[in-house]
Length: 312
Image (cartoon, rainbow, N blue to C red):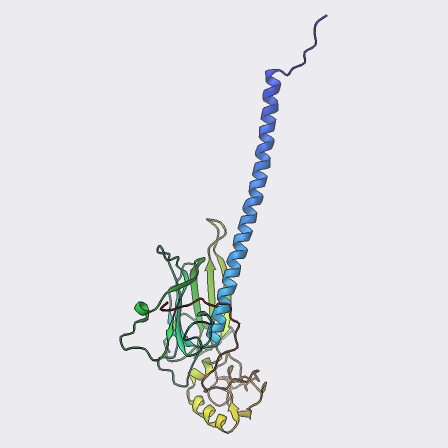
């Protein structure tokens, strides 16, 4: 009687190894896809958080734009660099408050200039979204912000910045859409609104950049475009009343109106008589800001403590 075989043949072993290899490859491919998707999601969330933080800081900084009633050297300077995800637009204006510079900046609560743009990395500087800031007044004649200030990178993840400004001469198109422009020649004034777009590094190498966009209103924009309102606002404020940018007088009490927004539709700049260019009456606002007066410390959320320490 022949003895029964109790071992696998070579062919059976090879088939088993092949099946085990295929199963391992399938499991690895699935696991790798899950890990990549998780990494991409985490990168996208991180980039979105960076963009949201920067846009919050920019919103607070632009809304606290300082304008004393005469626009010379206090207006906004804008340099356009295209509108693609790699554009590096530059914006410079005067503001008060800690936004973009931090609470411990020596000049946080006095008028100071800020300049924001996007720069390419240049070791050891990380590049990305960068800020320069300096005191507006009491500077030496030889002061040069490019030489005498520190360029601070707030987020190296930003690869592009595009800015569009609301046209001060024609805020709306014939289709009643907001009329954005890509240049600002009235550098002794402020726009009433800006549209800012940030592009962040993509989650994957060949993916599209992550885009974040926001429209920001500037409370002092309408006043800067009609400086004659500043003197009347100052005169009426001495008598215990305040004048909205759109015209008219009202009691100086909290919540009586929004002098910052001009007491009118922000996107329909006033003509000094309380009406928009198309003759529509001003719309009521909210808040109690006095136009034309020297702004104090703005009530903004500060998430940038210690971001800017010039000269240290």
